Length: 268
Image (cartoon, rainbow, N blue to C red; front, side, top):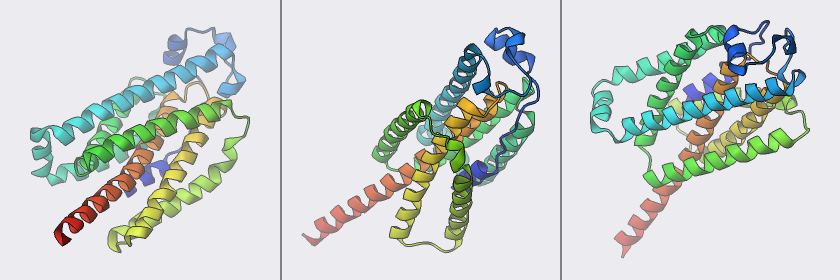
């Protein structure tokens, strides 16, 4: 799971210097309304709404693709058997996701290369998520999905209506994310107790909830109109990380309850 955290902490929020023709064709807006280097918040309302629609449309497609791909990895015997008999492919998928994410930071405005890289990245993350879901309790997966969706929608609406400058929490979030990365790396070699694992997962839930507010604020105020790929990837990573941590909490609790009931039955 540390790969997800590293991706979240390592991505760059690139600032654009010009607007590509692809976005202008999409928004169908007058070029005179767009000024070089202006944030979305400083542009015309029509440009702002076009940018927001594009970001959340891309995010929706990413999440739909992730659900479908994860379902195939989890419930398709042929796909699951393929990955189980070829463990090297999982490492290749991790590397492919990381490389495509790094490439997106430099080619986020190069159409259609940005779409290709985005598709590769989303597919790679979907496979990894499917592997995590496949070893989790089905009830916990459904509960985590509902909770993640509810938290994301709630925080998004709250942030969009709030007048607070959430960019101020950026340094705190970045420092916390690096701390989580270090803890996750240590945990790979020195297992923590169940109570400490729970504390780390709860901390991660709050961390990525904070990132949802931070990135939503950036989308509305600090990005430029051609940063839609970076914006959608940012939110996508927030949602995936939040889902994984919620699933981790619920799945472990489900297993503890199951073991407790089994122990009670054996004692009888």
